[in-house]
Length: 193
Image (tube, rainbow, N blue to C red; front, top):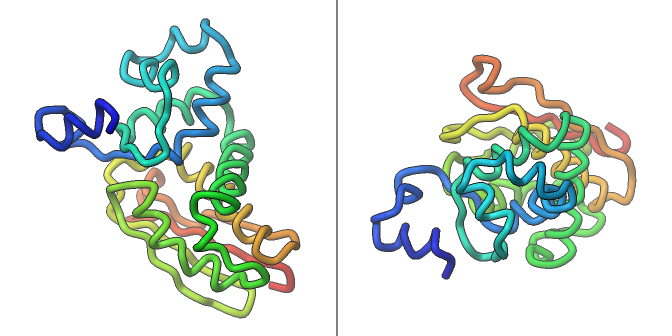
């Protein structure tokens, strides 16, 4: 159990009152932060610096602010999408392999609501089939909306769709809480959509 988990279990740590992200959501962004070197890491807030300099445990929970700070500080939206793509590939080929459906775009993306709750302890994701190769996924009630996390999520969804179909996919975020909407909505279109 990480220090963050232990504090939350006792109800004495601030993370018990703030949204949290699972360690699996932090693997790629912490790897990139470490690769940027000591100068980058020194600019981070102490909680984020502690996570980057420590060992990220897949099953532990960390303050969502750590993921947000890293995503906002690391790069632009193109890089955030790339990191999301890498994270999806890593997770769907390992820890969340049982939720991956080869050859089945709808089957793979229908697991996104469950996956959201495995990555984040705030908000709820919804799945809606629009057509054979078109899916709408939305996230409501997330406590720490961030355009950076939305770009990362769009990349994650694109990679999941491409892994499932072995073909190019397109993901567009059509509404976002950071732009005044009540939820973030992602339109995923697979090959043939």
